[in-house]
Image (cartoon, rainbow, N blue to C red; front, side, top):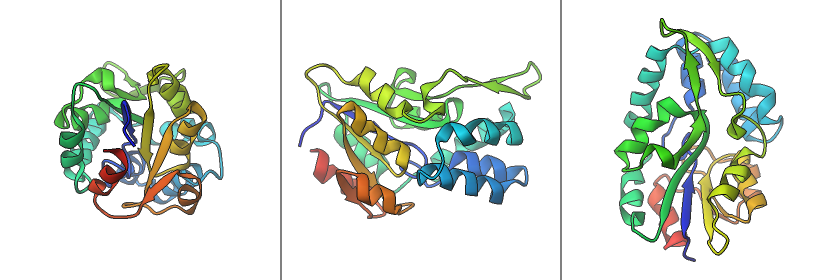
Length: 213
């Protein structure tokens, strides 16, 4: 199969971490946040039921977002750079679609050769002193069905789109007519095995190239 638009989740797909869980761990709320994240990624609760709660408890400041940005790159999944190098061409669009924090994902995107317009994630806002103020509550990516919404925007009328990710929210891309490749190299979820069109549990992201090229 060949695709015009190729989209990647970030957490547990491009990087080995779940950003929100790392931020929680940093302020001593790790166990509680991991439970909430897992519940959303396994489809047990809708994303919007946990999104606001997680951020209002953690209240990540500007410094912690910079710290997380570095961690995303430090914990990059094996093979990611090779995958992006192999897929970068004038006839393909590459995008990151994530329910994570946009400011933390942008440096990883730049490292992979993407521009800001190719990153779709949730902006957060800070007070003048750098403390947490709020997040973009209108972002489709902070609620269920948001990834399908972004995929519809990216999918040209005659084009084809593939979404690669590890969680239940990535499976939503099928609602937009996308092919979904489940990636279980970091976290192997049964719901993703069951619902993805294709699946790879290998630790290197290079394993997905056989399905895309």
